[in-house]
Length: 97
Image (cartoon, rainbow, N blue to C red; front, side):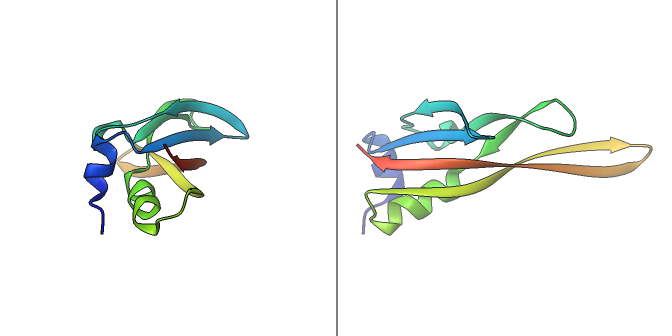
């Protein structure tokens, strides 16, 4: 079985990230630290890091040529002593290079 980190280092994965049916970014990550996208949070207007390393791991281990996964960006704020989390879904399309 292929090590998913080796696949990344070799540039073996192409990613397209979509939010609200629009392409946010297109990338070819080579490090796990690059497996995120700037996702605009609808409820707050802030930009959160939408991480998708786990979805990338699933894709690489699946052996598929291409796949689509739903992921979520999360923003946490503290207001009046209460922690509130906002979540925003986004889509990641993977293909092998």
